[in-house]
Image (cartoon, rainbow, N blue to C red; front, side, top):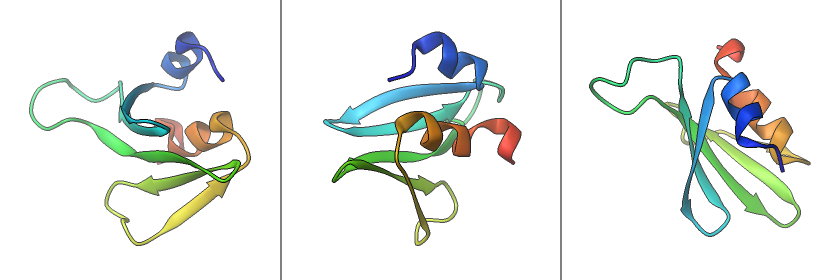
Length: 77
């Protein structure tokens, strides 16, 4: 798993919300107002399922948590 410093380099904050479920927030967005949620990641049968905020019916799957987080990084807008 990637270190916290790497998450920050990607501009993300990873918050565990349940076992093997994470909320991914954008650190580049101001902390005022609503949380800057980019999406959600869930460990699922050896894969990582990504649900982007604003696209709840669409899922992407990755072989590593690192790849899932890169997909949600602010540079991928």
